Length: 544
Ligand SMILES: CC(=O)N[C@H]1[C@@H](OP(=O)(O)O)O[C@H](CO)[C@@H](O)[C@@H]1O
Ligand SMILES: [Mg+2]
Image (cartoon, rainbow, N blue to C red; front, side):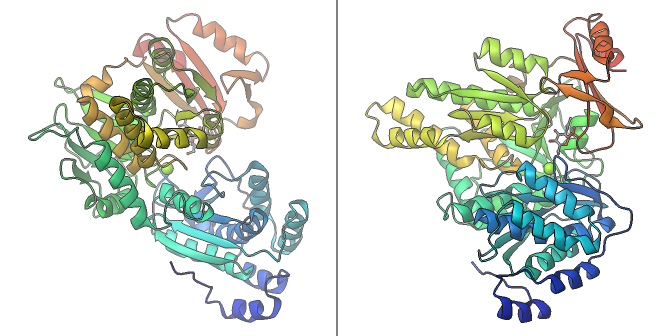
């Protein structure tokens, strides 16, 4: 592993003199001018970091490089910076900071990020000093930052701006270049666990996942099996490059055919997980034959949804709720085979289809918790259990295993005398190794799902038939100021403006099996409306 130092001439001269003990504000100011803020622009660090048109992000990147150094010094850990705008259009870009265990940035630091990004040039110094003081950042501490980027044309230059910010404050860095968002999260975690989690290379990531997949599916593949071919829509993004790199590590029985691999089409344009979920139809650039199992990644490969067309040509979506159900059913069965009473729960948001919640609670007897939209909320809740399965309906999710659960399972996989129990424990152990626990990961989730389907001998039909989704509709509404809407109860009820919730309640009562809520988006200037009911027509009318 190489550690790169900045090649900035100015930085080199600074670091020999000050050895990072003080911030060199002259250098910070000099480079701030080179990464100037467009006047009048204000941005907010939202659910997924900063996102906007790429041409407005140069100063944000530079400043996030600065902030990442302070966060690294404060936590005495490696911090990640990922340059991506996920499923947004190719012209957009964005950035988010990744905290020490691969998780999302702490909320107080989100505020610093917003403040620093919107500051005028002459205010930067004061803000950096304030952060150091409030957070007791020791400037003597070394800083190490890992950087990754997606395939957008603007990403390379923007990640260079991050590097400028890191270097000017004397931080060291490793630039992973083109990686998926979850790969970068995984690398951050590796660095901070002294590589106990795994070696901090993309190659080691492939090897670990592939080994776990091979072990887990050992008994599953039968010769001449025709169900194991899978068509993958890569959204013309980074997922294509990385899945291609990984393919040689995977067994031949898993036949992956890639579409929208970025050689022709535009990123996220008429394809990708978000397109498929929102439009409820297959992406362009892929021929979907009846009953063929297909899936879509989003632009930075942290989300996945499955879909197929039935014999009558009807489109079926298997979203995050279906994925959570499949995985938790599988885990629950293994746990009962092992004879262990580890706590397990599924964490969802208000957007989870009511049928999935009912199926999990009533049929599977798995406790379900509802939290606010945004991965960080799901992740946090899932940490409360030995096994926490979390997925947003849009396909972002993973499974978290507590340290105690991992130790117990690894012990049983080795020492358990009862053959059947030991084998089940081994399967759980391989499942743990197959899952990227830092964040939702389309490649890792794909392998988990394919392994479970193969082991259960399930076709996409069997999986889809576990429960039937309630018809639903999501709408976006532009309003003058979305912040007037305030919600409670994991965003399922409106508490302001007064009277709105009563109106919604009145409408919901008119339909069977119905549910509806509104909330201001955390990533777009819109209010989102969600409704579900017994028929599509009723769901549509209720939403409208
Ligand atoms: C309904 C919906 O899909 N909301 C998305 C969207 O959040 P909003 O706060 O709804 O804009 O973007 C988030 C970040 O990518 C993602 O976590 C979330 O699931
Ligand atoms: Mg994404």
